[in-house]
Amino acid sequence: MALIDKIFGRKKTLSELNRQELRKEEILLTKQRDRLFKRIEQISTDKQKIFQHGATQKSPELRKALAQDFEMKTQEQLMAARELNLRSKELLTVGRLRMVKENTERGKSMGRLNLTGKDVAKISQ
Image (cartoon, rainbow, N blue to C red):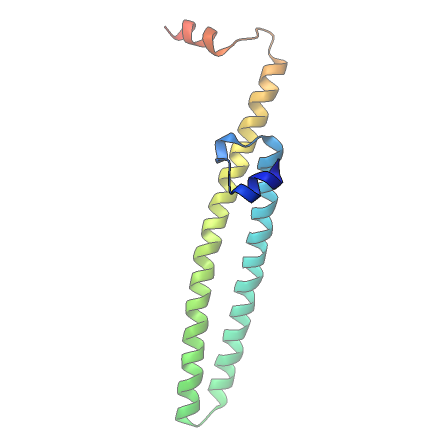
């Protein structure tokens, strides 16, 4: 079924996913977030190398070129940081939704009163 969905481009919304699918999404988001962490750290070390190299240079042309490289790395780091922020929020959302689904399933099986949605509606009236 998943292959057919990928072929035809159908995609479930977040609320339509079951517990296992939510867990898969959570794992994928965690991997993406970890990749972004590593990318930001790599950019940061590259910026430090560029800075150190620029500090030792005497030529204004080389320093200007290194400053442009540094600025490019800074912009790349900002873009990666924005994406990391987005992935972190998505991960929190998926994790919370998964916990809610797990708790509602557990609540149905553990309850002694076997309350349904109809019962709650009658009580609230």
